[in-house]
Image (cartoon, rainbow, N blue to C red; front, top):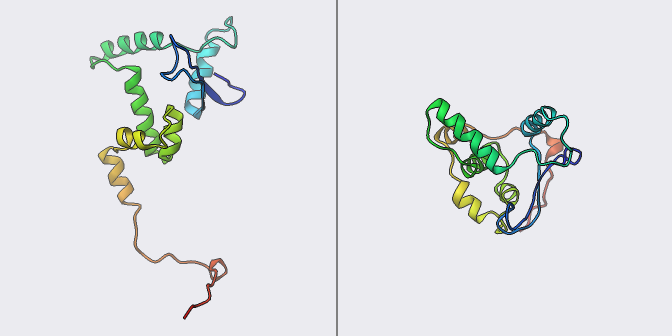
Length: 148
C-alpha cells in the first residue's frame, strides 16, 4: 500500500506477483483505505513498507469465514470478479476497470467477463432512461447556422 499516494501497488514478480510480472498501481477506494489502515493499526510494530496482506493469508481467512457461515469456498479470484462487477455497477467505465485489473486490451476482456450486471442493477438503470424533452436555459444553447 502506498497510503501517501492513495494507491495499491500490485507487484510483478515471478513467484508472487501478477501474471505478466509488471508493476501496477490501482487507486485506493475509500472503503479499502479505511480497512487497510485499520489492519495496519492493529500491527503497530510492523514496518510501513511491509505488505498489508498476502493472498495465502486472505485465503485462509476466507476459508474460515465461509466455513463459519456455512457457504461454499470463495477465492481471491471470486473477489476480483466481485470488485470488477461492483465497480461497473457503480458507474466506473469499463476501460478504467480493465486497467485496474491489469488488462491491456482496452476493455474487451473486461466487457466479456465482467460486463454482465445483476438483475437488480439492470432494473435500476432502466429507471434512469427517459425520452422526455430536457429543459435547457436559452443561455446554454449554442445556435448553429442553418445550411441550405
